[in-house]
Each structure stands twice: as structure tokens, then as C-alpha cells.
Length: 128
Image 1: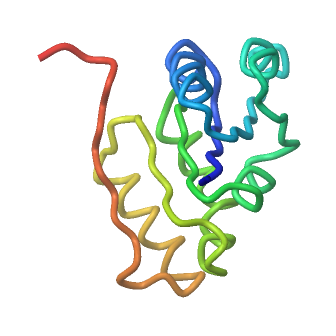
Image 2: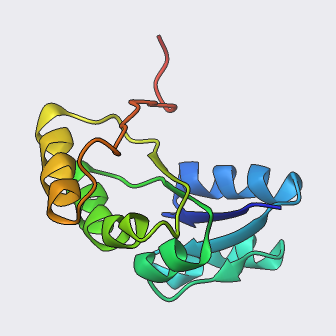
């Protein structure tokens, strides 16, 4: 079974964590506010000490973060681990703007991921 890592357990991240655990996936979680992870931990998730640890211990890494600055900060820690082949996929639910996409590309190029990064803008908290 694939293991899933989730970085960010605010309103959206907590709901995502609940769905992942209800589907019986192994889940590692990390949030800057340790108390935000309580419900996920109570449902059987494992606490990771950092985004890098989530990346090292998960086949798939998801993030649910409040702003592009946080996404970039997390990806700077996760993409080098992705380059080792330890992670199968990285996805973020935050709508990505061109500046962040360019920043992700620069980080990816620095760790040897040219041609291996795919960003999908999957904003899930907005109505049409």
C-alpha cells in the first residue's frame, strides 16, 4: 500500500487527512502548529517532525498550505528528496501563480529535476 504524506493541517488539510485515513492509507502529517495535527493523529496518522521527514517517509506527498510563500518553503525541502527517487509524486492544493511555478522550476533545476516536474493547479476551496 502506498503511504501518503500531508503537509499543512488547517481547515482544508484536516479534511484531506480525514479522507486519506478513511481510505485506510498510511499517513504522515506535519504542520507548523502541532495541535492542528491532533485529529489526524487520533485517527492513526503518524507525526513527522518536518516537511523533509514527510517527504522521506511517503510515496506521495500532498500539501495544503495557506500561501505561495509557504508552498515554496516546503518544496525547497521536499524537492531534493524527490530527486533521489524516494517520492512518487508531489501535489499542492493551493492555486499556483506564475511566480511560484517559476520558483518551483528553479528549485527543481538546482536538484536535477529538469523535465520531471509537473504542477497542476487544483484549487479545491473556490466555487465556480
